[in-house]
Image 1 (cartoon, protein in one colour):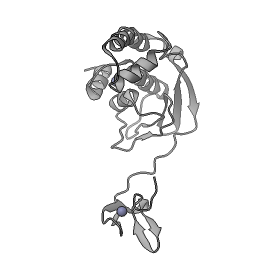
Image 2 (image 1 turned 60 degrees about the horizontal axis):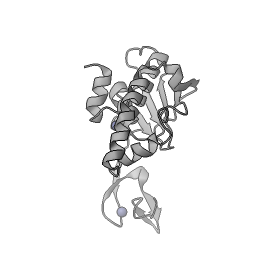
Image 3 (image 1 turned 180 degrees about the vertical axis):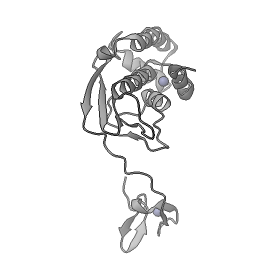
Length: 192
Ligand SMILES: [Zn+2]
Ligand SMILES: [Zn+2]
């Protein structure tokens, strides 16, 4: 199984946004070069969508191993780091709308399950050529790429827990807050 196939298997289907994440992951690997024994990649993504799954499948940086941080900023921007080197890849404007300015509108409807049969048909007739373009285009046509000093750090694993004095559920101690002399979980503290 090649890495594109691994991304499709992990994500559940192939699509143009998966292709964006796949190309970003492959470009990051190329720019960072081989890893030394014991070195690991870390990634920060600025949206959670199909592209995130490609990054997880290709780079093996996952939400669960805490080597993938999702900072939801509404951007197809991917920062990937190894010890001593980090690259930031930003999808260039106009890539997703390459075959039509309302493609993103259609994609939203299809992804959210509100597209009519006609809209679905139009979407799929554009999505295939767009995906093929993204898979084959020169990387410099797709991404603005620059080296950055480092990826924003993940706070790391926490497992030490306390029981919330209000709802009784266990919560990681570093998430608990003091309210009127009690230790409470973020929900009971009224934090969002
Ligand atoms: Zn997808
Ligand atoms: Zn609580």
